[in-house]
Image (cartoon, rainbow, N blue to C red; front, top):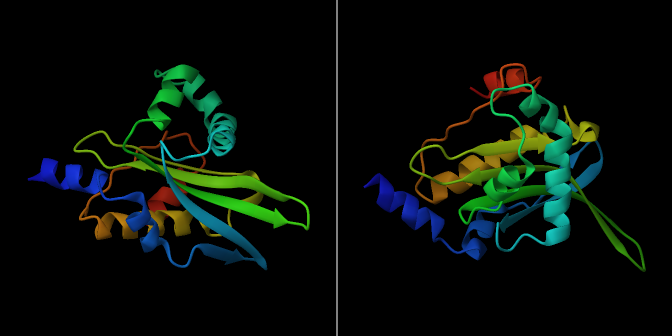
Length: 169
């Protein structure tokens, strides 16, 4: 039964899952940030590059000092698995000539029977604004709409964000 739910959730079209995202913006301290949802396959290469760079800036040192170690190729493969979905917070600045999109945070999640991971990373410039809580809430909403009612999260105990996760429950 659980495997059926996981299989069904992973095959819900991305367009349907995007429909669960309204509103698609977050307003914090007078700034409006856009939330996009992509699959591993649909995520533009430039966006993935920014996501991986943010992940590496925030986590590489913790991995290096852990028993897991750091393997860039493995991390890229994990983040590109077919069942990975990415909720991405971007700051989009528009001018008459160019649109500049900067990734400020992301939440990668996977729907799996066991060992699925949720990875939440925020740029230092937006920490403490409630964007992490907002992304977690959006992930929960998408999960419920897809028939998933349990989520698992792992965090390094020495990660400064551990208190954030405790507050979420």
